Length: 198
Image (cartoon, rainbow, N blue to C red; front, side, top):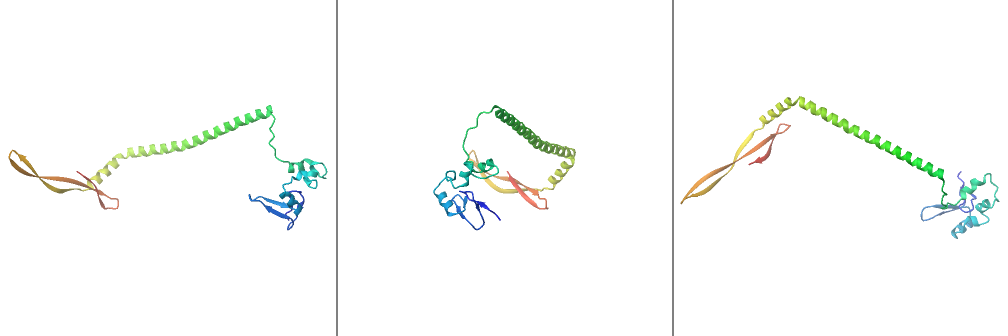
């Protein structure tokens, strides 16, 4: 069984009793009776109403085990400037230095970890290059075999007749433009035409 406390007078509210008020900002206020609800709507301060628990606790009228516990429940937060304390300032500065030291240590560890991954990648690449350099003669032979398999097809694209005037005679000459088309061997065994070269 959940027992709520009244927002105004701090009396206990048992289940199915009291009034619940929900404000537009979705904050809920529980009241034990209509008297508390009406006083809340009139914006009255519980500390100034003699019949509330807050007023009685502030005046020393309430029978409680620990006065400070009850007063801390009703204490209002005020913006009171903190007095200068040399020990507090020294402790704060020491804590700030320690925080900076920890942050720098973590940054160094992060950078070292990141660079170790980069260095490992570089080592793997260097090892791969070394293996390729050792077996370069095998690769060169393979490349030469592939080049030999690629057929070079020469095709005569067009014939143009050019007339040249030599003196008073016209001489007709025919010129041929030869274009070479390269064929590329595909992995699955087919042949694909590459870009034309003039």
